[in-house]
Each structure stands twice: as C-alpha cells, then as structure tokens.
Image 1 (tube, rainbow, N blue to C red):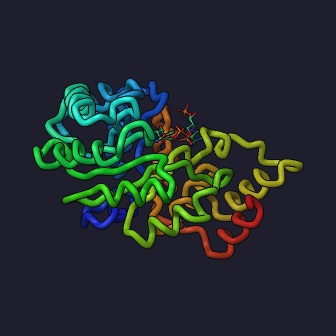
Image 2 (cartoon, rainbow, N blue to C red):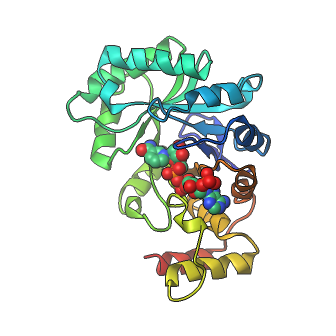
Length: 267
Ligand SMILES: NC(=O)c1ccc[n+]([C@@H]2O[C@H](COP(=O)([O-])OP(=O)(O)OC[C@H]3O[C@@H](n4cnc5c(N)ncnc54)[C@H](OP(=O)(O)O)[C@@H]3O)[C@@H](O)[C@H]2O)c1
C-alpha cells in the first residue's frame, strides 16, 4: 500500500482508506483492510458506524488512523466538545486522529467552531483538524480562523464522473499542503459495476483500460484518483472480497497516457 502525507503533518497515511457511510459489514472487512495496509478509517457521528469501528480497532488502535466528523448541527463551541466526547465514547478510544467538520454551517461563525476544534487538540483528544465539503473560499476562511494548528485535510466528492474540484479546490489544496480525501471515489458503486460495453462510452473506456492493465474497473477508477498527488480515497465496501480488490488499487500506477485518455473520455 502506497502512503501519502496527511497534509503537512509529517504523518503518512495509506492512499486507500476505508469509508464507513452506510457500512453494514461488521468487524471483519475492516480488520482485513487494516491488515492490507488501509489503516485510515473514515466515519462520522451521523453515520451510526462509530461503534463498529471501535470494535474493529480493539487491540490494534495504535496501528489505525481514525477519522470521524462533527455534524454541521453541532458546530457551536460547547456542541463541538460534546460531539467529540460522544464520538470518543462510541469509538472506544482516547483520541481521534483526524476530526473533521462534516459540512460548513453558515449560521455558526467558523471562528467559534475552530476555537473548539483547537481546544480538543490542546486537550489531547484530537490529533489533527480537517474539514469536509469546504469550497476554496470556505477553506480560506477556516484557515484564517486557526490560531495554533493547521487544517490538514478537506474531504470532498471526487471521482471520474465528478471532477468539479479540479477547477480550483484541488490545485489550492496542493499548493497549501492540504490532503484531499476523496469521498464516493467509485461514484457510490457506479464506476465499479458497468456495463462495460458500448454505447456507454465512458464505462466502455474504463473497462478497456482495466483490461489493458489487467486490473478491475474499480481499481482503475481508484488509481485514477490517487494519481493526483494530494488525493487519498476512502471507498466503502461491506464485502471482504471487495476490500481486497479496492486495496489492490494501490502499489502500481496508470501511465500518463492512460490517465490522459480517461481524462478526455470523462471530461
Ligand atoms: N464527507 C462527506 O460528506 C461524505 C459523503 C459521502 C461519502 N463519504 C465517505 O466516503 C466513503 C465512500 O463513499 P461512498 O460510500 O459514498 O461511495 P463509494 O465508496 O464510491 O461506493 C460505495 C459503493 O460501491 C460498492 N463497492 C465498493 N467497492 C466495490 C467494488 N470493488 N466493486 C463493486 N462495487 C463496490 C459498495 O457496495 P458494497 O458495500 O456492497 O461492496 C457501495 O455500494 C463513505 O463511506 C464515507 O466514509 C463522505
């Protein structure tokens, strides 16, 4: 498994992690993923999956990078602290590696939220602060609100079908040393299930590249994302076989020509 920097922290994380939205697979696929090197697990207080993550990392907590998120309804100072307490309890851990603001909330000043996020770091309950679904202007404002710690990541929608971040957010994060955690990297499964024949020109092209490089279409779709330097992907799967497949999207690279071909077809 290839590692990538978590922003400018000096901490390395796998370029493929494990997503937990709508996850119902139990402990086994998570443990398997961690064994295969996908030791970044991404959950959220609103997913209802923090408990199973806590069970899965029991005994291996120090080998796992646990990422969770505070709901946009809990961004007032005291609410952030309470939300973190709840996540720590459900995750059955003493610290969260990456605590992310799930969505911006225009009704709560970002300065107030970030004061609480920084207080959690000061208390040793959170190691790094991240955001999610922040545009460039929102990210700039959030960065300006930080007093002592940086924003290390922005978790956003990114996959072959959804490339909006390429216009400004991706270059901005690269320039700022902020990791981009790509959610729905398989477009909620659509990029992994075909059909691999014409007249669906895009899926056909993905299938052609996959056949050429002797990987599966899902692996090509994930590798296309991680070919971008700051991008880490967090595919979700309930299935051990698919976790193995998704982890197999790391350790090799599409050629520049294959990436350009997919870029053009999916433009
Ligand atoms: N920050 C946010 O606002 C936000 C929003 C959405 C998602 N996320 C995060 O990103 C993670 C991933 O996104 P996502 O769950 O929306 O979508 P995704 O990872 O793009 O796709 C998940 C879907 O693809 C299927 N799948 C996974 N691997 C496969 C494979 N190799 N072959 C065929 N099908 C496969 C899964 O089914 P099976 O489980 O049956 O394999 C599931 O239905 C989430 O779990 C969550 O952690 C964050």
